[in-house]
Length: 183
Image (cartoon, rainbow, N blue to C red; front, side, top):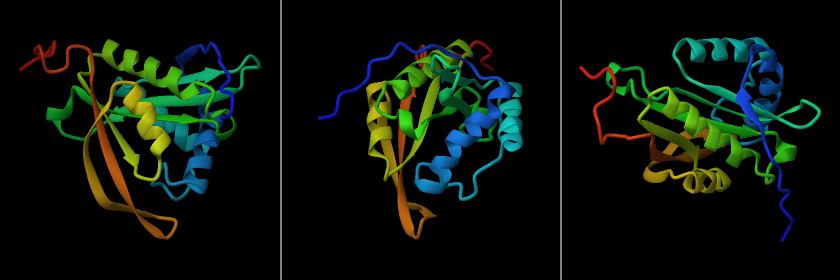
């Protein structure tokens, strides 16, 4: 068994200046894995535009850095679906630098992301996870997400069909109360 480094992480809002580091981290997952179903890694400008759109929609983007200021990972939320009825739901994503996996970075990021989503009034969070990513399933389960379904052979990447797991987590009061701006 490998030792796990215990670190105290500071998670903060990402800035546009973080876009290049975020794009670099994400590129690994696009090119080398099936964690993302994108097949071409977005550049820093594209990532910055995604961050701007998220900010306009009140969705958080977070980063954590090491003592030298290097971004170790990022987490963000975005619209789960483009329909008014999903206004209080979001999809959450966490990506950790490939050389920082297993050091608590993902755990720190997902906890902070959940807090940020709750503070923004979201009531349900969904994680859409490739079936080839069991560590992501475990990370989300430890953060209170539970499985709600599997989409069989929903994606195609690296020459194979991939299942997708959907996990869900109540945020704040979830469906126990009406949303603030209920109609």
